[in-house]
Length: 248
Image (cartoon, rainbow, N blue to C red; front, side, top):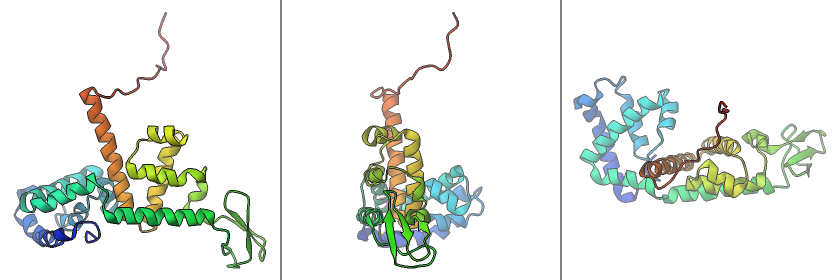
């Protein structure tokens, strides 16, 4: 899992650390209340690629808080026993690894080809005698006379403004907030949240797990930075108008 993400010089350190994890579980007092403790062995490779707590929680049926506690313990071990590897994991969050860049380009190429296709076999009878109709990527089969939309199998038929999907992916890679996406693409924040949920799910469904992971990390980073700026007084959150009328 980590071979395509971590730098090559850290692969031996990663293997050494993963072999040491069972010993640390048996001897560390940090693990006494974490049941089952063997779950830390499965979570450790995910910590090495900075997988978000939400994905760890979903994979092992944990609460996000429980996933975070286990991830934090593994990071403490990393910092103590493999400091260079720990720094490499932190660097994953700060920069775009080559594997993320490759997956992003592949995913965008796949999406662009899907939107521009003019030849599509029928979803119902498999016939190649189909014709594209309209502007929503709908096709009609000349053999069985049925219409179909190839976006439906990816749940993309529920999203509008397909001409804005590729710019939206670029903004996801930058970790931009929904407000910024609203300003740059002209879609409201609720739509931006819906698009993010759909596209991250499609990335995982199509095997672009590293890309989906990176987008979520960048999003968390941006939100945290905004909150730190607010606390420091360099950024101010909009107050908005009150929904309550003042008594006269």
